[in-house]
Image (cartoon, rainbow, N blue to C red; front, top):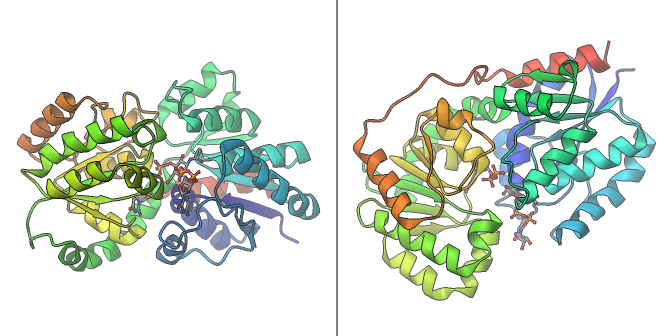
Length: 370
Ligand code: UD1
Ligand code: UDP
């Protein structure tokens, strides 16, 4: 019998990172893969549409944990995962990224003696006020095999004392998904632009915001939207609103009204292929998303990151990403600078070539299916 390999996903970026790994694992014939969905994200717009767009099969196991405080959500994943994992005893369990489901699954597996492999290990913002940073540090500590997307991650792990033999620089599975879906995304793009009221062939910007530090405090969110509204006077800005942000905007109707009147087109979170198609044609992106920083790097789209730090420094050195924080003057200056410059495509980071998942599965095969 083939060794069992469990893949655990829970939130929007996990689905994007996991889909190519599951596809490669199935194609390799080395493992019997099981897909587990924790249910951290459950809205069709954050979950179902990603399964469809990414060609993910229905999960073999759905834990349906839903939303909750950090402790409650993490604990609920652990509580529901443990009995199934104890019974199946897979040869290894793979987790992705830095969300609560990642940490919860890694901790459950490690305590049961199931080896953990972490895809997107070693990224560090060095900012422990970010919940994801805590998830990254602890998940890496618990992992036996650490797959990294960029060289900075290897350096971070070496500094933390992780043995070199445990770390494999494989590239970026989010870019695997991007390259895999790009052609279909481009086919959808004209209809998406029309639906959003964007002029055919016209320029536009895309905004995404969901980091607690940016959206959970009303005054920060208002100041950010006011700055983006300035850009909106020159360029239509499409703003697919994450549910966390939608809830905060509901507390601040004035901010939502002024954003709308200043040329920001607020819409529901978009499906993966529609969003990638929109991103691909954008003149400028403003974001606090980790994944969007990487996707704009791969596409060569100018990106302003509305944060003071990034755990993905390769997007600054190999991409078109610029850290502008939350200061309105810096955001506007960054936007003007990027809009004045020609679109430039830099050399993509090493191994961001669409084949990271194949490398991951080959390494998993050597380690767990030999
Ligand atoms: C989570 C991750 C974050 C990741 C983001 C991707 C953690 C700590 N955070 O943040 O790292 O960048 O996902 O999008 O794991 N909600 C819905 N529908 C859903 C899911 C959530 O309405 O399907 C609402 C709920 O009110 C919930 C809130 O959004 O309380 C936040 O959801 P949660 O999963 O806790 O964190 P995110 O902000 O989505
Ligand atoms: N994304 C999407 N629709 C949207 C916003 C984002 O499909 O409306 C995709 C985006 O292309 C990327 C992923 O969601 O693949 C990133 O997720 P998110 O920004 O929520 O999380 P982060 O990367 O910050 O953890």
